[in-house]
Length: 198
Image 1 (tube, rainbow, N blue to C red):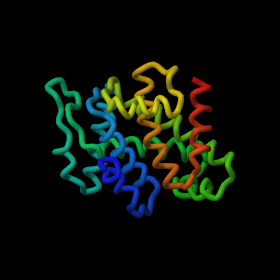
Image 2: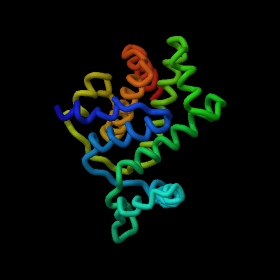
Image 3: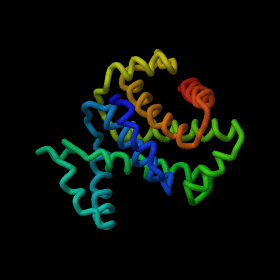
Image 4: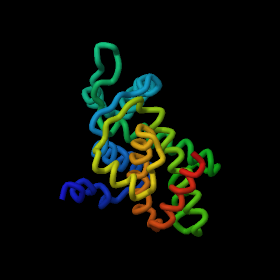
C-alpha cells in the first residue's frame, strides 16, 4: 500500500509540466534515497535557489535546509531537490528543442510518433542522469528497489553508484511516461539506447 499512497501526486492536475517534474522527482527521490551526500557544486547552487525561492515569497524554505558545521547540506527539503532537477531539465530540454516552453514540447511529443517519443525519453533520461550526477556525491538507496530495477531494465553491467543514479532517473522517467501516456515499450527502448552508449 505504501507505493500506492506514495503516488497520490500522480492524480493531481498540473498546469505546467515543470511543476509535475518538480513534484514527481521530489517524491521519487524522497522515497528511493535513504541517505546522501551532495556535491560541492550542488551546495553552491542551493544558495542561489534559496534566494530565488525567497524572492517568490516562499520564505519558510529557509527552515527546510540544515547545514552541517562544515557548511555542507545536512538535511534538505525534497521540494528543493525536485525544483533543482526540474530547473536543469527545463533548461536542457528547451535548449535542445529550441523552444521556450516545456509545455509546448510535451504537447508536441504527446501528439508525435513513436520515434519522437523515444528521442524525448532518451534526452530526458540523459539530462536527469546528468543532473543527479551533479547533485549527489554518494547515495544509499532502497536495496529492494535497486535489485528489482536492475533485473527489470538489464542494469547488471553498471557499477553500483552509477546504477543507483540510473534507477533514480528511471523512477522519474516512469512517471513522465504515465503523465505523457508514452508506452512502456518505448521507455524500455530508450533506456537500452542510453545503456548502449555508456
